[in-house]
Length: 216
Image 1 (cartoon, rainbow, N blue to C red):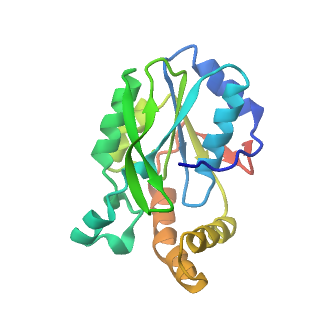
Image 2: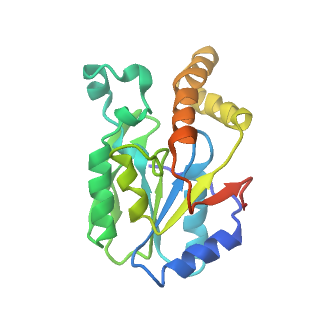
Image 3: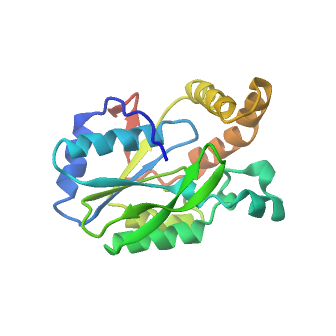
């Protein structure tokens, strides 16, 4: 299991989250945004920033709750993998509620090598200071996703233009085994459609906006 290489982070965001840990244990931070906006990279960066301050943290990736490829095939959803309906949304919500309650929780991780979720890959201990949840639909105002935002202590939304995201996504899809042509078709198809779902249906009230790595 590997995570993205950390990048520079706005220290104001780190300060805001560390301050929130005094009000909630654990502090649940949600990082949302359309495909290719850098959610996983920011999550990895925050883990490093918190560690340097003696604050413990763990990443809780929504992507681990993708339905298996077998289930996607069975339900006729393979063509729209990554859409809201292609996730175990209620399973994700249940695990998040358990983490909120301070329980010991094992959560799955999505392997970009296997292109499948791997069960019980990440352990969230009760004494953890910050749980960093990252995923496309954390702020979605549609059932049952709309029950996630009230659980979050801090909501972050990554605002990155389509041109930047498209380039990143094509490279990602190619690295995952698609040809350059197949990667472009997938990005301009399902990924672009899922981007529209996020941008048109997210409840952004009270969210912190991050553009180019900086708080807006």
